[in-house]
Amino acid sequence: MASPSPRTPKFEAIMVGLEWLGLFVFAGLAVSIAAVVASNTMEEPWWLLLLIPMIPIGFLIADLVTGFGHFFADNFCSADTPIIGHALVFRFRQHHEDQLFICTLGFRELNGGLAGLAVPWLGLGLGLALYGGAAATITATLCLSSAFFMASTNQIHRWAHEKAPAGIRWLQKRELILSPRRHAKHHKAPHDIHFCISCGWCNTLLDRVRFWHHLTDFLVFLGFPQAEESVMGTARQRALAEATTTATVNARVEA
Ligand SMILES: [Zn+2]
Ligand SMILES: [Zn+2]
View (cartoon, rainbow, N blue to C red):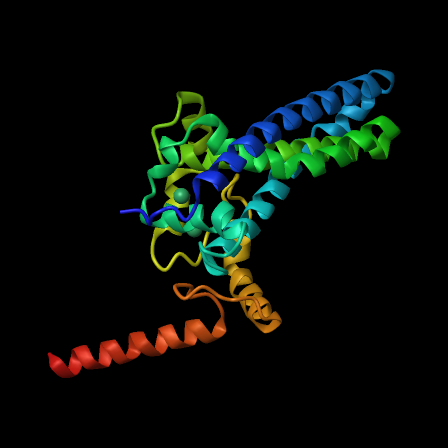
């Protein structure tokens, strides 16, 4: 059973407007960058050799960025925190309680927020593309690629929770985008691994070096309010380990 939404009707109305605006501006900027990059490349076709690798690199950047957003929303602040609580934290906390709610969202509600967040990034990309030259055109392509995959993250995440179209299942099976099998690792309590939800390629390395636990320690040190239910960070992990040991000992004594 999902938590009741902290969003007021007025907040919902503002979000609807912002999400549509985000989608339209995103589409306009993305098409403009693609057109300018194509025009720049026509003069120097060999640039394509450098532009094509920007697609997987952009996917990796998007994966990392979504990992940061997801990690923060799961482990810091609360659904009642002004603005980000209503817009970001609530959705992620609700998703742990009701994994399939994401599959009920319409196109605007699912993708509008992230499209809007990617707009400044695309604005930078368009400026670089218009500036021209090899380095600026390549960086503009990277901005476009990473913004596209960032804005597609909720759709990719949703596909990991439902029967996706055949082409998407083909990509999931080959781990070219977030697969249901891998994403299920995050949904297993205590939800402390696999935060990256775009392609999921960053998860293995980040989890292996316990990156999110170290980041939690750093943010707690800076004074960020850790969520009560979060088990991330050295102190929480130690408490969890002690609680598990005590429970094991008690179970043995009682047996
Ligand atoms: Zn989560
Ligand atoms: Zn999920």
